[in-house]
Length: 161
Image (cartoon, rainbow, N blue to C red; front, side, top):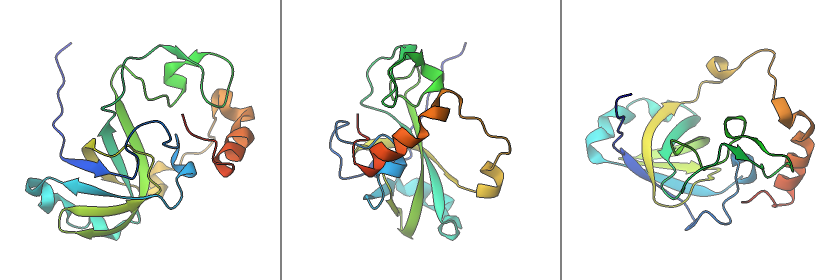
């Protein structure tokens, strides 16, 4: 297979200086504010983005080191296949987050509900369009019986790595 390379288009800033203590899902980050600093040469690409209430950030998990194909998720005690989890250690350390977009000033995007470490390299931005993202007959696999435990952990602020 050919080598694939990406060049960051900006950097994400948050109040989290290290992975420890970062809530592992956006639902545990309500009200956490941050910014995205886009490189100046990409400013024209922000045209019309402010019309969206939410954006999808695609980023490089630059502090992730190694991975295992089986992991024990936070909300479970059983090893699961890596690709059936949202664990940050992955063969390609790519993260995605859907975040509210508050405003844009120049090349700075003001966002909230942030579950990302400060200094994370941004790879892309896409608009979040619920109608396009919505799927019928959704199944959530092994998480089916864990959802309530996850919601309780978020409510109790125990949803961190």
